[in-house]
Amino acid sequence: MSANGSVPALRLESVSAGYGGHEVVHEVSIGVQPGHISCLVGPNGAGKSTLLKAITRDAQLMGGRVWLGREEISRTPSDQLVRRGLAWVPQLDDVFSTLTVRENLELGGYLLKGGAATRVQELLEMFPLLAGLASRVAGRLSGGERKLLAIARALMPSPSVLLLDEPTAGLSPEMTNLVLGDQIPRLRESGVAMLLVEQRALAAIEISSRVHVMVSGVIRASRDADQVRDWDELAGLFLGEE
Image (cartoon, rainbow, N blue to C red; front, side):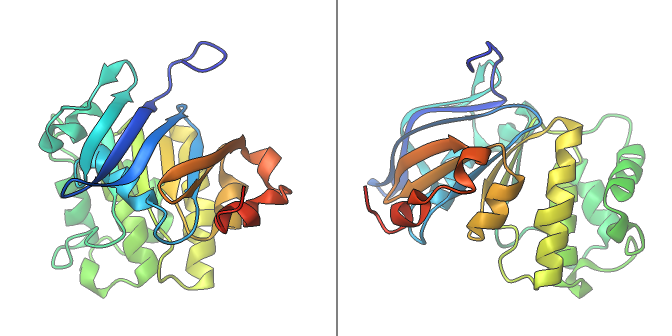
């Protein structure tokens, strides 16, 4: 629980993870409250994406526990995580290129009872850029448009937690500002908790409530974002300095 007694939407307790028996992430403990963004920043190779993949079972969870609200999901099969309220936007392979924008959204709502039409309309209103592209094949979208579609598709089942892995990778400055500076912050209004991995550290900190600095698979520091924006030690931590 947090200091005020509320239960985080996502909570990691001493999570260690890696691949093929090799540990990359070491005993990470963090939490994300509903309607908040927590960002995970650090140098390349720090283990940030591996931590997200451990939550989704795309990496080996080698120790610790993962909770969605009051439910432990440490041993929940990966194909059941969406039903539990977890959504995941990977850096690559995030949409179906041969389907239209609308078809991608409809496919993202396969768990919804009574059809997805109403939810599709809600997401198109939430992502106005996509509304004019609803009939376009996803493979013909720009990188930024495609990333917005990936996020909207992940939100179709109304998850409680959204994991975002490098959402601005390869995007132009204009689309980076739209995705990271505008669209993602506005998602807080829905109450979804977001754990964001982002190389544009200062931009990520600007929109976040909580910041975790990871170096060599270890969380070196966790701070409220307003304590980090002028934190002189941030660059030193990226370089592995104490």
